[in-house]
Structures are given as C-alpha cells and as structure tokens.
Length: 278
Image (cartoon, rainbow, N blue to C red):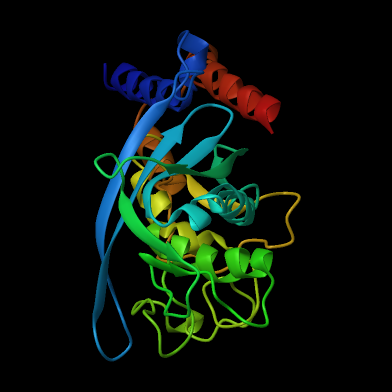
C-alpha cells in the first residue's frame, strides 16, 4: 500500500513536469497575453529618488512585446520627427534580449505607440530648444550629436527608466541593491556613449512574467554579443532533491519491473520532449 502511494506521488510529479502542449494546450499559444505593469521604483545611492514605471507586456509564443503608449506634447515641427524618434528607440531596445523559457528563447521587442493623452502611460514634452532631458522631457537639442545618436543614446536611456531600468552612474538613480552596476562602462543606462542593453535593465519584465511563465528570465540573445550581463537579484529555481527522493524510495519495498516502468516511462517522455525543444 505504501509502495503504491509513493509510486502514485512520483508519477504525478513527473506528469506535472510534462509540457501542457502534450495535452492539447500550450502555456503560450498563438493567443496573446497582456500584462499591465505599474511599479514605483525607489533608487539612489545617497538621496532617495522615485518614479513610476508603466508599460504593457504582450506575450505570445513567438515574441514578447513591451508596449509604451505615449502622448507627445509637441509643436507641429516636432510632431513630424516622432516617427523617426520611434524607429531609433525601438531599434535600440529590440532584438538584443529574449525571455529564456525551458531552453527556448522568445525575442523581446519594444513598441512605442503615440496616442491620445487619455490612453497614454506617459505624457512626454518633446522640444527643439535647449533644455534638460528627463523621463518626461525629451530635449532634441544636443550640439555634437547627430539626431540618430541623440535618439539612441539619450532618449532611449529615458525610455529605459519607463521600463524600470536604473541609472548606472554613481550620481544617478542607481539600483541600491546592485552597487556593481553604479559605474558601468558600456551601458545605455550609464554615462558613456553606448547603446548596449543588458538583461538587468529588464528586471521588472522578469518579475512581471513569473505568473505567466514561472522560472523564465531575461537573457542576451544568441546572436548578440551582450551576453548575460549582471542580473538583478537571484534566479534560483526549485529542483527535486535526489537524496530525499532516494531516501523515500529506500524505506519502501524493493521496486519490481512493472513498478520501474511505471516511474521511468514518464521520465523518458520528459527527456525526449526537452531534447526536441533544445
């Protein structure tokens, strides 16, 4: 009786590890799943700084899209530049990172949508006159930089804050939990002339996706030289303790051939499935 109970538990555990697609339903199918993210970010090394990150995640089986709805407070001359600004910023944040899930990588893409004020995550003032650039103030006056460099290095940096990314220079809105990032030398969120983005910049995406894709995490794409970067927080995943499992089985009667088949067949299916996905 005890042996049968143990075998039943083992069988149920192994079945839980099988992908849902074997039973006619995938976790991420062609249907899209939308997650609205809104989080107050607390940053700073000495003086505390706060802002609210807001965006939507639209996840499907072939891509994860980060969507920012923006209302542009701009005159007619600047409105004509919004399409070019959108293109440059999206290019910086798209195709460099992916969501790693069960051995597969789902590419991440950024999409900026200029819309009405009532639908926007942010209202941004976009202007050509000299001034200061911030999350909600985009100054397009930057002597010494081309328009493309301005969009890709400065405005894209501010968009990073909208996604929850911290500054990576000592006097900025740094991550208080990751001092190793305070003086990043090759990072969009640092002070160097860089367009490099890293998984740590999308730590908030990591957290928001856990309910939909438990155990997933953001990585650099296979064709990107950006690699893993520095991840914010630990990424431990629960695993079955083999010693504990062996101790449980050893306390029962020896397993017969039928019993072994009962346990090993599902395990074989799991290995074959993951081998096919790799």
